[in-house]
Length: 374
Ligand SMILES: NC(=O)c1ccc[n+]([C@@H]2O[C@H](COP(=O)([O-])OP(=O)(O)OC[C@H]3O[C@@H](n4cnc5c(N)ncnc54)[C@H](OP(=O)(O)O)[C@@H]3O)[C@@H](O)[C@H]2O)c1
Image 1 (cartoon, protein in one colour):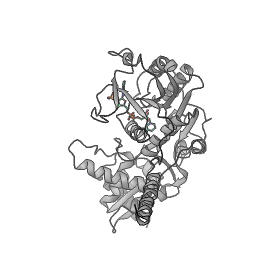
Image 2 (cartoon, helix red, strand yellow; image 1 turned 120 degrees about the vertical axis):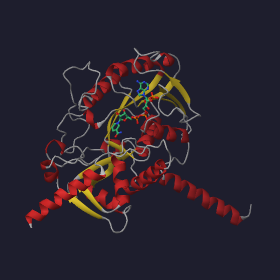
Image 3 (spheres, protein in one colour; image 1 turned 180 degrees about the vertical axis):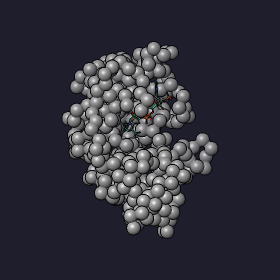
């Protein structure tokens, strides 16, 4: 190979490494591939985690019922059963096998976490349980860290989410405790806020890039100075693998970005996706609460019980290697992904409310109120 050729090859290698780092991919494989068991794997966070783990050269096994997106990851070992030992074959298929780490993405009821963590305790080294910031008691403290009080429920044996999903958080707190009891000192609890990005089935964050791309007069709740926390699913998935590689134990909030982000900054980033003639109409929190809505996804009024919700400290997670990509990248990639979903008949095209009609009605009501003031 000539000197010029060698220089070109070296430059391309450097470029490839910079590209992979910039895109959150690992430049080098780990020293030792891990055997990773994912309880779940086919929803939203599972696929992002598995993709990264495979890119790192790890060996992945999935455990689920085989109902959701069964064609995902044909190269990955799939074990089928139910987290509920009372249903069908339950956890039978997990009675043999050894793993370095279990990533429990589908923990909703403490009885089932006690069953899986208890069964696997002697055959895995680490148990990473995906909890949520909803596991904290309400109202959330402003700027709270992992020591904030957890949510509780009167009857911890209940196995329903409740009419308004009110049991989700307290049940997650109980799931954390069940894992810690089964594997003391070997558990990692991860408490994310809103997980967002490509492949999100909830349509919450996705609402914003899609709405802005459609342009016109865009209703935005609250004030530009409100705070907002989100985490890109790819950043979270990659970090779960990092926690496994470093065998990091403890409890961590997983809320981004690294430095506090104002709601107005996110809306500015959304505007980059909008046609030039688009305009933003800010609907103050007081107006929305007086009119009974509409509700908007992700944003939470910076008052009353919601004040602390988007203010969780992420210092501990950042210290343990959690990295965040720029919000504009998440917005752009989410919009690109959504557009490809629209082109396929079985795509994930659900968007959270408000509907176009509800948004238009809110804008009309707000303008009416403003006209009266003038
Ligand atoms: N989305 C957010 O903003 C957010 C925020 C904070 C925390 N979280 C937490 O993040 C986690 C991520 O969830 P994910 O859906 O993305 O995880 P995932 O690993 O992608 O997939 C979960 C899979 O678990 C399987 N599953 C569900 N119930 C099961 C059961 N009884 N037995 C066996 N398998 C079962 C389902 O597949 P089958 O149908 O094939 O069984 C489902 O597709 C959850 O723990 C959630 O509480 C989410």
